[in-house]
View 1: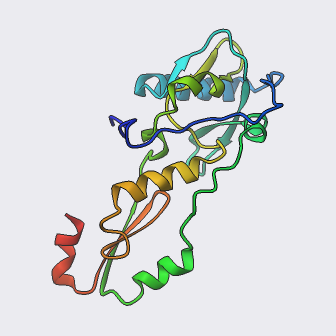
View 2: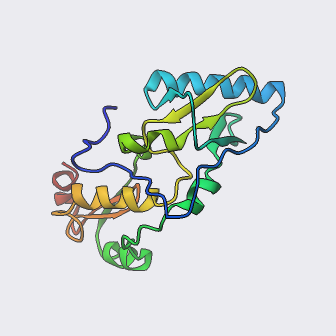
Length: 195
């Protein structure tokens, strides 16, 4: 997946005055978790979502979460960076109004943006702020694309979706972050609306 063009959207990490870079102390992980983290890091590197980092100022730890499937989700603990980041007050859709907007339609198609956050690049001057440490000899990396856990990521994603679907929102499409509903008053129109 090539990602969205930077001219359309990119995630910026502004730092409020008075905050200095913070490096979280390392955490310990079992050998089993370390092996799963290594697999996930290799997948992220191959996808081009992360790069090896050196000489970091901001440094976060990873948090491993086991999914119901047994797969490991590697999250990043950005609590210190998030505290230093001002809130993006971009207006988010009201879910009740989205439901009301789709309620009287004969046919609905629901779509979820797969790896959607990872389609938005981090501003090049802010990539170094996303550095994170892995256990043992796995290394230190930084995100090139927007990961989960960053403050304002939802607002950045919603802004992009609103720009992409602006002509269709409220007519044939409703969007809430990475959830998209295509709605049609009649079945005959639905394939055209999906196109």
